Image (cartoon, rainbow, N blue to C red; front, side, top):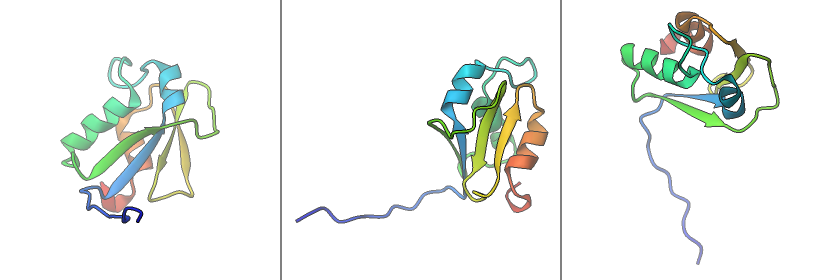
Length: 104
């Protein structure tokens, strides 16, 4: 008899997908000195806003959009909008564009 499919609750309310291939190509490019990855900058900004556990950032494989000097990102709650976040983008602007008003 096959195992039963089970569900588990998570603390996540939002899942952000970042293209891992884009991130590796960038080798940083975000944050005040431009030395941090987009994932690190977003995670720190979310922690400051009190969203440490309810937002999950996942690096995926290639999403098929390969911008130059940018990282492709998607809020899984809003699959109709995919963003390309250029190197050096302000963290506040990225948060506004990536998160909906109710999640900030």
